Image (cartoon, rainbow, N blue to C red; front, side):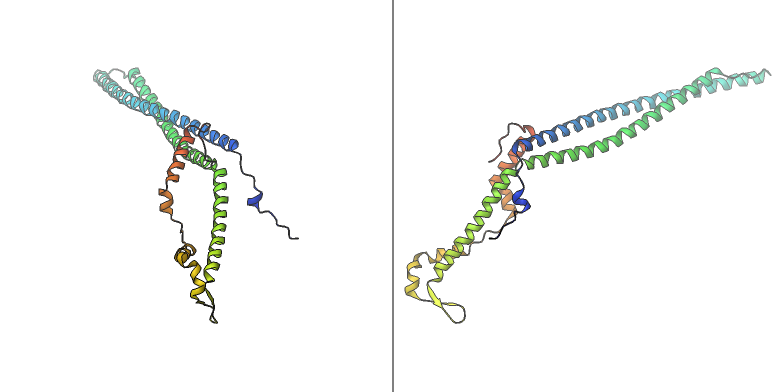
Length: 243
């Protein structure tokens, strides 16, 4: 007796629909969280941009104040020198320059923060893409039981087709007797019983059903499955799957 070892495909257990839906729910939740993080980051980018705009305007005013303070100090120094008086430092100029430096520091910090937020946004966009792919993969995984049933049915249909072709070929071959060159000589008396359906037998034997990707994409079942996939993304718990 010959023992047949089961292949990995035959021994692999089909995932249960509940576990597949749970995986989809998890993937959808992960995507939602990443999108919320991206929205928060984009809002922070908008605030940082507004802050930079405000600080740039503030810096312009601070620079103007420094200019005016230096002009005033220049007039004071010129007046003191013309009278041979001692030149004193201007606290107003120092204060204006200190304020300008402080605004410059704030502006540089805001610009650095914007760069960090923009870099984070790139990472978050990549996470959104990965999470979106994970959702689509989980949607597809929900169809594993259905796909495995279709594979079994198609494999059985192919086996049945070969059997039927062989049977029809044999019956048609009985219309003649073998020749020495490997062919068959048709005998009218032998061909008579199947004469009325012989052409149909020949067409059936020579059946050709090539795979056509375009035809598959345009088949109604493809649109039906696409609609189910869309509903699964929105409602993974209550969307009915094909048996």
